[in-house]
Image 1: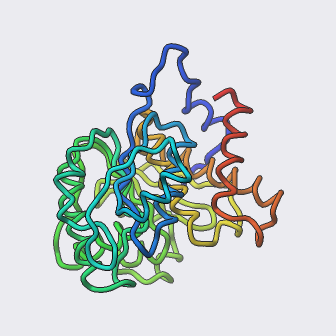
Image 2: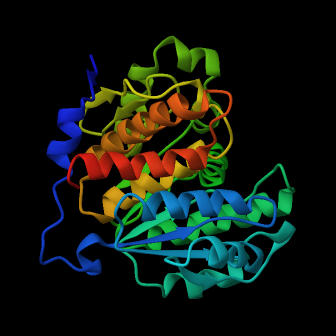
Length: 299
């Protein structure tokens, strides 16, 4: 039976920042994200990482995304990438992306896929196939990165892994594509399936939804009590992916990073709903509430 994540657990795991620390102490997140169709996804993920303590966040993306990032997020470093199919990141940029210094890779938000074209989906698969195995640190695979991985698994290929730990953050539809199960089958026993595939793939699975399940390959699992239906809109998962990557960069192990991220994401969303309503709140409303929670807990 999965244990429930508690506030006490979160603040025990996330320590105060040492007085003698510097930006290198808290790692570098390299977010490979965004496309002409999904510019906001990259910005939400990057700001989620910045607001959750990463020392440096570098956004690798195409020019329209970087222009928006430069205007909205001056703290974000930029890695310009060539545009490929449908305004997404071209695989031609992979060598340049691989030269970026980073401790955590965030791969997937807004990259584009079959919703744009078969060509875009194919290029996203190449990014996943080549960037994950060549990365020396840990990684978070989200959104279109998960759909690319699902296609690789359907073709009988192995799930690509970085040299460090890997966190997958699927919603039920993405998990169905990854596993070949129906959403109804997943819903029948979410905890069991999350545990099963965490072990099978040697990853931490964050199976999103009401009472998100976090499962580790060693059999540990927890359930998140925070959050509300106001999170049921595009962009919420991008914020969570960035937050998760940041806690990895802050040197939390993958299971703990994912567990703390989902709790804080939901708790900040509960505060946003109290101010804006579940209908009126937006994913970016989570971010200032997150900062207030860190301040209240001297973090």
